[in-house]
Length: 587
Ligand SMILES: [Zn+2]
Image (cartoon, rainbow, N blue to C red; front, side):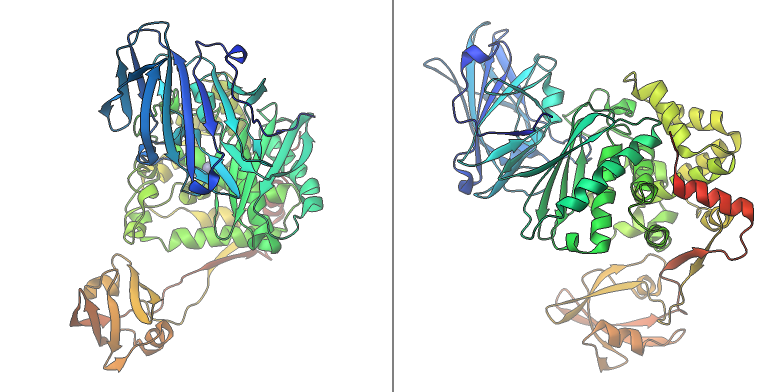
């Protein structure tokens, strides 16, 4: 089995190893404590100028991050001749005064100061490099192989999905380079196989012993369950790598064709809920091998790294993936039915307490991802609904609808894979609707409404058909629509729900609550206890340094959470449907 971990590469790249026509990046990480990634790009000019640019976003994370803000000290030379790169725009440069066939060296430094799965991080202990955030692209070379070598601190290793070559790695083109992050440092690894395909689970950052035995047993089962959704026993990749970085508080994942980068809270790993959450995260990114990477919206074929593109299909790419990331853990027998129902009820509660679900449709959520979901603030829940969250619940309804007809959402996924993913054709929203309608005409009409409308989803009815009762939990606190935080002894408004008593009173995020009906407020519990539903109460607040008085008239309590439980009166048909749903497809 091929090991993904490489020994330190401490020799400079030899030009004899590389085709000099191909861009070659040499990355020097030997002073990691300075957080500086020193890069030398060597490329042979094919005309009298060289155009270089850095992506402003990375696929899978729909935010213009302007990675160029962490790039500094760009200079270039051709032999002894110093060249002056000219800025063309925010992300790109032009190097003139050269001739075709000349070998140009471009030097620059990138700061590794952002720890996430979509940025660069480097310190004395570890590193994580996101190619979109460091690899200057050379115009005209996008579809050529790109070579990479890395100079490492002593004792460090590299994990990457790129193919190893003598002295480094090779990407078949610039897109594959962008799709291949590097995990760096002292890495631990376990290997397993799924359908004969090698898999590697590489991790770093744990302070406690790793649950290696549990991972060795659980991960192959999890991956097999994901493969079963696609009607296969092997993944789309022919060699798959999980790179997991454990940190104090982080959480996140980013999908790639042949690997994924995960970030997870090391303390949570020791809990049952945390272990399940890690499996869900791994399943999510693993399913993305198909859904969104190879089975990809047409707008993302090819990727346009220079700026935002509108992707209304994100409800499918992320929503369906999110629906299954919880369900396949149950399919694999790695959580209980009650765990699954508890997670599902939490998602339903989150949706039903998000006022933005009545404002933004699911299709709008996808197209507005760049300016809303990825740029959240204290008003976001009033304006938007997550395509992950509502998309997953639409996927649930689609699955229950199709399972009742003897089919299932996995059948749609398999058909789309056959029609688009396996032959690398991009799909559109119209293609999705045509495929859904071809499976079930009624479902096509329903999905159209669920995606374009802002009415609440018919969750209770569909769940009842599967022998489950969705019920709200009673709440005793009068409703104000205010969400409070205690910040350095101040009771502050974090969020004000739209169309709520708090909004009617004129409250804003950031306001400090001082007193209610003349009584000094110190804690949020006092505020909850002193509210009198239906009565006008005097609220003293401080905003912008000025104290002012407001009238707050709270309403009777509203539900904040919902639960799911088995319906004792469910008929056989409902029980059979639930059994098929919880068991998953078999090959
Ligand atoms: Zn995702």
